[in-house]
Image (cartoon, rainbow, N blue to C red; front, side, top):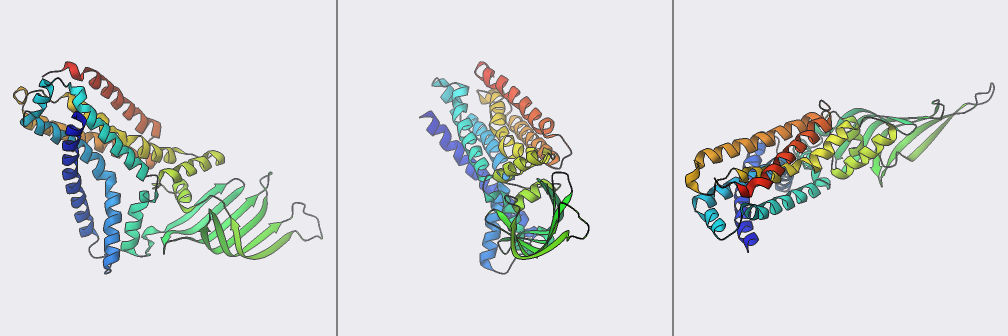
Length: 359
């Protein structure tokens, strides 16, 4: 009964704030791209949809926190919070439905980041810029086992296909000597592997003997190679500030460990997608601790203002630390895990003592 009552009002306030923030975000982005928006109504609707999904990164966490403040202040003004406590419900029992709902919403948001919706910003920009260089990645240099790969241009969203231009692959043997070289002007990613069109392969004999042919050149119309190296894995490893879904980030992390290259950026992406969003229920519990039991025990305007400023400050701090960690400027365990561990410790203290605080 309590869960349904509290949950109904919490979700009601959440929808009000969430839709308002989403509308504001879409309005600002539409004005930003107003000169570049396509004339097609279908493409415009797709742009608004993808842009709205991308906006979830900003609007969803802060909406969950702000609506909890709105819930407590409204219930306090109407004496409904006092009435619930007079019926025998503790502060922790009243808080439980809010924590449960916010955690479930955050879990759903994390699940969404494991799908291609994580690239909603790229989809939206691809519609706006329509094959311009905005979505092109240039001059990528990577390593896979005994192969070194250079990609001149990578088009992750060109006509719904993943295409690369100017791809060169150098194969080394166990003694780190060049044994083969592949080159193609154009390559496509299909069925978890790359197809090099009209590829030229130069193979070098392992034993160099005077008078014998040591270089063999082969032309292949469709050469299949680089299994598992999809475009997002390439970008996640190579780019300064990559964007990746949870699935692609895990694949990139696996390859990074296999190749012995730095995985700092990839770990930062995973922490930012999986762990950091749970700052929302932690903040809600801390805010609930400072809400008085009766409106006469505090200045509601000042309390709500302080809670909003505090929530925005915490959200801004974690957002900034995530961006810095993904850019490689801060070690992810120090920049992300350590602050969230401190916030969790503060949460545990507040949730333990919340029933003991009356004023």
